Length: 295
Image (tube, rainbow, N blue to C red):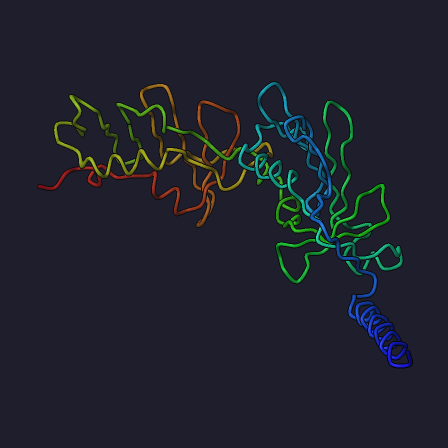
């Protein structure tokens, strides 16, 4: 009997020690979730407005009919790639752990008045209001708080990389896209010469010469699509045009030098003024001899 009592006592002591060890190894203020849980449950197919306030200011995008538009601080077609990446992220923000419920410790995780804020709407209804904190040691993890909860979570999602980006990353950056409408005639003009390349009987000709097909295709591919590096939204007086490209007599591209590294670019398709970097401009401003086939 005494031996049985001793064994029972030892078992109880062992259980108590295991519980104490577990409590001591748990990080203070953090509760690990046993089952994966998403931060927000939203039907992303119904989302029609995304509002962000980040270090670059206020940005808002809205779904209008079947197209997404940036509506604040300007109106401009939105980048569908950016919108899709946001919707995919919102569809799968996995909670790793509950970090703290202590308000006095929120700032430790970057949750304060300077935090990036995100609001998600469906049919005019606010679905979620998220306050983004710091990245964790793993850049693919972020501290996040729901506006209506006093809990900071660690989530498996690079939230800052998705939402704390400038306006230009939310805008459609395509200037023109010839991927689905391959040209048959391209006219080039600059101060010293004017020449055209024409597709005749499946052969590219430059004046009376046969053009280098590979060089022509390489050039067309640069316009499939051609994307801007930056946007000029101020009303400005454009400098003198230095180069012009006309495609199939209906699309015109004008290029203007700004400084050593940047060029303005305009088209007859939109009043928007674009800014492209030097390497991209030089790839467009071709000389005639670059297209002539050398036998």
